[in-house]
Image 1 (cartoon, helix red, strand yellow):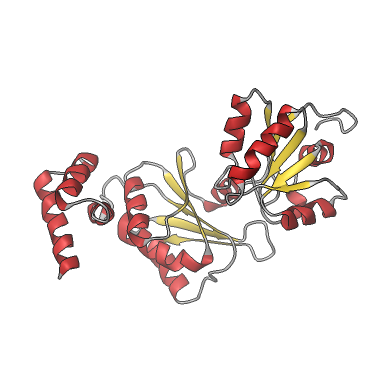
Image 2: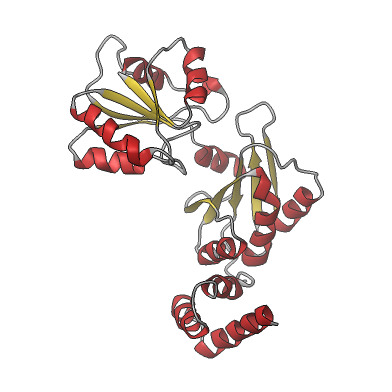
Length: 286
């Protein structure tokens, strides 16, 4: 823990905050939040509630995806002038599926000291309780909203020999689980919901049963959700991975271009790729 009586050095502090339970904040994080000149945050209302819990009053600046281009130079000017600024997200560790990496990159390029104040993260919290392999992990963040792009993203990760971690919102959970079953096959998985909060729930089952439970309303599609999916079974190829990649490619490429790109990417025989691509194209046109 840092000494609260010792002034902080100038620079940018990347401070992890709780993902649900406000008691999860670290002592060092509280010291830093008390010691900085101001705090850059996604939503000032969310951060103000956290600060009020611990009796901290600091100037807040909203910094998020929608205003980052305008706010980043202002923050960099303050840092160049020797200010101490904390960057926090609404929950968890900044830059993990949250805005901020461009600010960190720009600050580092400008010679500003950037320090990490580690702490809670939904990613590590879910891995800790999923009961699935954690020696190799691929974090996919939030999947695309469009079905074809979502399936393509899953297909690109289908053969990776690692557990997959996906963040998902409640409104797309059912569709995402259906696509995971289609593209990845019926793997072991853990659906982690509302971690560290009052209604925390962790369901460990195969993807198809989890998908059916969500569709039937047996698992509430509410709150913050993290899905952890087991690595592929080496004895079985993921199902429909070629079709998913082709569907996505055909959204923007001609038939010839899509076949060339997908055959190269998947290492599949060109004749097989062409036959599948032609069937998809004919189905769409028919």
